[in-house]
Amino acid sequence: MFERRTLIKHLLRQRPDNALTVSSLGSPTWDIASTGDNPLHFSFIGTMGQAAPFALGLALAQPNKRVTVFTGDGELLMSLGILATIANQAPGNLAIVSLDNESYGETGGQPTATAGPTDLEAVAKGCGFSQTCTASSERDLDAVCDQIWTVKGPVFINLKIVAGSSPLVFPYSFDGATAMNRFRDAVNNPEQS
Image 1 (cartoon, rainbow, N blue to C red):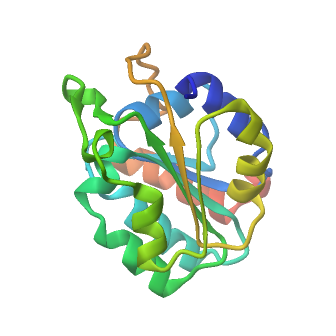
Image 2: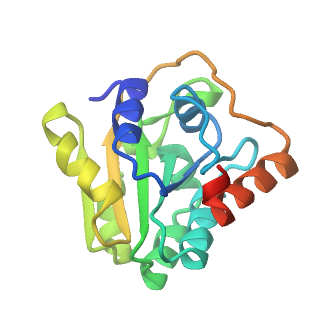
Image 3: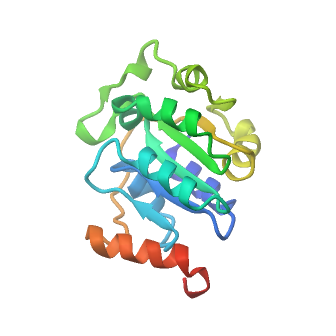
């Protein structure tokens, strides 16, 4: 299994300059914030279940830019229907990266369904994703990076990570309006970001 911060740092080093990234509330946001500030990244702070729908809308609105959402297994399990919606809309520029630690890390480490028989990659395939994988070791990282940043989507990647907490690293802004305006300006005026 991957250590989450090391994994995120490695994945984001491969990010194309104009790629748009989204992170769900909790650990995915803290993980990405720990790699440094990027105005082309939007973090969700208090809305569980909204990162993937937001990323879908963003991918449809920005078809010439790669959109990648980093989300937890708990958040995806909360709104599995979004995987069916994404597969049916089939945006070729969207990648979903599930950081699957098999637990609800933000609320005390209770096991999620993926600690049992639930397989998120199988769910994504069943919804209609043609590009999927589950990875848990360093030898898979090059293929994972290629899928996240270049393979025609929609792509679903389930990354098995070690459960446990990391120090909180806060994103640029906790104010929703400020964060959204900054992100929108960076997307619409990339030369100024």
